[in-house]
Length: 508
Image (cartoon, rainbow, N blue to C red):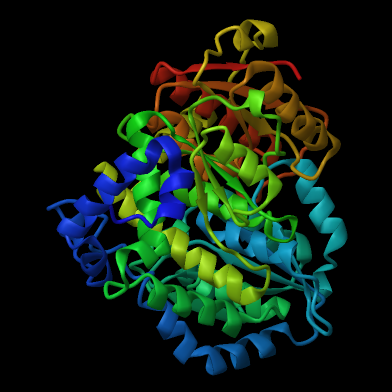
């Protein structure tokens, strides 16, 4: 047995399967091939693999350039009180982690993230960020994301030349071209061989960290330590990423596919980033893992036999109770400082990529995300859609043991409805005995949306919308943000139903 006894004991019913998958990964020399950027670890065809492995070397590249990068950022932040990151998915989730995890540094601007098209959220951001003291940072790999481009045009028109603008994007993107045409204060060009969800320690995450005064060097150093601790020359039983990958793959193979992260409150927001990484990487081809994050610990009787727990403190009372009850528990030791965040990011990236190899999933594409975008476009082109709400009890009656209930909330994530939904999530878990997740649209369309459509069929989707926020126009569009949000909700429901998912809009 490769697994050391304490780990094996806590994996319980997954121990034997995990050990077998570890042997398989070792026989395939998986870790060495990953570090060598060998796309054949996942598939013979290099498409969307060979050009998606830059997240390993980027850690050292950004570290080597950190002083010059910090100088550029300091000039950009001079005289600024607020930074508004406008992005979606991989371009916004790690900045959101930074904004919520670390207190505002003395003498540095406050970091805000806009990743919703809800008019109420836009109005709140506009009130919090005076144009003359705000840096508007558009962040998009492709530069064509409809939400980010709409945010940018809204800000550009609204500030009347008072604000300062910058972008982070891939070279040659539409966003780079636009920024140079308009004379933006800065254009940060990221290396293009990194997918959005693996870009946290690239410029997409490090530039916002520097702007906010977070210790970016410590984040990168933590990432470097993780690469050292999980590299090809490390003993398999000591390689945290490798063991975690094998356990994840084992969970997917035997129905323990609800990967439940229990994080300390100080770094709980890291769960948002982990959720996208796992869901979008491994939720496809009708299989994969369902990440459960931000869930309040519950009594043993609310957990089914479909859970695999990842805890940061294996000696905690809850972890001990879970393991004693036969639930598999994996320890991911995690501190709460900047270095620990960087370490966790790289370990999770490595584990997810290796788990994909073990399961037989290509972890770097997102084939079902485009379906929701196409459906949204179709709704917009026909002028909108009328969607009839279903009685919530009728939808909940479809939930069966082993299912995953996804609450899909197209509401203001900072509004009162969001707080009600957080409480409802726990109530439904305890009542139904299934994993319940909560995602805010359109943010989740760029993360768990892939899982909802392409992952396991054991899912019930409850879509919630709210009305009442005054419309906000989108420059050069014949529709506003509220109309766009409604189209995104209707389009996503169409895409789910096209895949025979149990999905409906419900009255709150």
